[in-house]
Amino acid sequence: MGLLKFLGRGSAFNSKEGNTSAFLKKDDYLLLIDCGEDIFDRVIKAKFLEGVDKVNVLITHLHPDHVGSLGTLIFYCFYIMKIKVNIFYEDVKALEQLLSLQGADKSQYNLDCCSKIIGLDKVGVEFIEAFKTEHVPNFKSFGYKLNMIDGKKIIYFGDTNDLPSNVVDMLKLDNNIEVYIDTCLADYPNSAHLSMKKLCEKAPHEIRGNIYCMHYDSESLIEEIRLNGFNIVENII
Ligand SMILES: [Zn+2]
Ligand SMILES: [Zn+2]
Image (cartoon, rainbow, N blue to C red):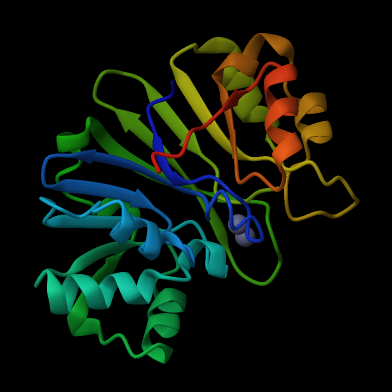
């Protein structure tokens, strides 16, 4: 089992598995990564916010399967829980504009870049760094490196169509890294997502035990992930 747990592990059209959203949670502190269209529904059904009063949401990019229910989460926290959600995204202006068009006023949430997250030690994280990922040309997409207090590292790609060679090299040298990466069965030129075929070409067998595939587009992909020596992630609900 990897360090991250998941509320959803599916791609945009995979309503069974839910939108991909990982989290770390301890006591009253939540660090959620992305809040796609069906994540608010899953949060409520799982009574996920009971006992939580520090809600931090790290956003990878602005596709609906990653931010689709963020506005509703802001309103729920503000009006029902009487707290402000802390949101972190590297292109602050773009997300502020999106939320503004949805009627969320800046007084109802906090928004900053990931270096400003406070209280991370509560979930075992020392600090978080952002990096750009190759996804779509319309807007910037980010992944995040979570440096854990115990020396472990999580490299979380949001949606991406590549496993960069520098990350492969890091995995060869350091067994304490867990990589979480968008993987799909569909394989075609200029895809916005990383196909299993391309991932197998990029990742030698010796590092596959440290790679966790997510953002599944089909049932049969899950079997392919296991057969090829990578890890699957599990939904908590
Ligand atoms: Zn996307
Ligand atoms: Zn996506």
